[in-house]
Length: 377
Image: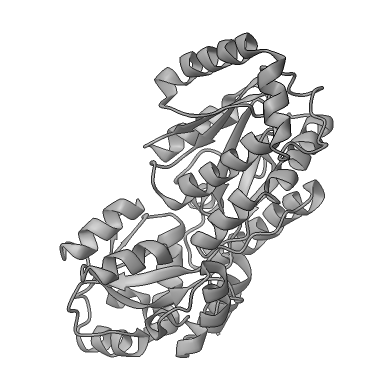
């Protein structure tokens, strides 16, 4: 019963800035973000109405009126509690690019935090005026429930949009590994208990993900060892060098490393909608059989999790609605759609109420999952 319950909950739960008016997109470290934004704002003012008219001529700036929240020249900061180059960072940058297209008169600054909790706390403690946003996924819920984070995205933050509805991840292993799919992996783990190491964020999303995956795969999640390895870049490097045995990464990165013979692709784990066909449509090219999903390989578990755009909890309803309208408009832009497709991620513009409902539902489901695993603190 426990196995069935966990598989069911993980399927439903882990389905594992956004401001409007974004004239220039700047991506800088926290120590230089303000200076860069000031320089950009000065340049915009000097350019005058000609620059504004040129931006409007692109046809990207829609009829989203956010002037009451972000007057021309406002700087909006988007905190990404993850290193540059990872999934959350890339998703955010695709969105900020699209926001730049629909909001040409507001400065947009992305700040990465190598220490996740620092980024979360910064957004939590920011003024609730709509000029500081946070992007993150359902893993933030898990970290709070397990005591690894002091930021509750349910109580300290408010969902103002969905960055996307998540996407499949490739499950990768070492080059030349003696197993090449999930069936062979299961057989190897049972024959070599305690030998393989899984790189994940301990106490975070990927540990919960892999614990549930291994439970569904071999019936006992303790047959492998879980070690700290959270960033995608680190996972790729450590799998390629045999420092760890199993990890997850984006499909495009898996394809590139696989083509170079640096790793072995075992399959994919993602939302229920993930199939070779649906993933191929997202990517715009047919996927090799090695990327078959868990369900296609007979493993009864999926990973369904949203990526959110959040604002501090005290943000007004008016500001939240304006932000959401800008996000929805941005997510209709070709640059954003193409970006999500490149990362094989399912994305659909979502209104304010449904964005918050998505967070509330995921919180409830993850609460049940974490509690069932004895990890809630």
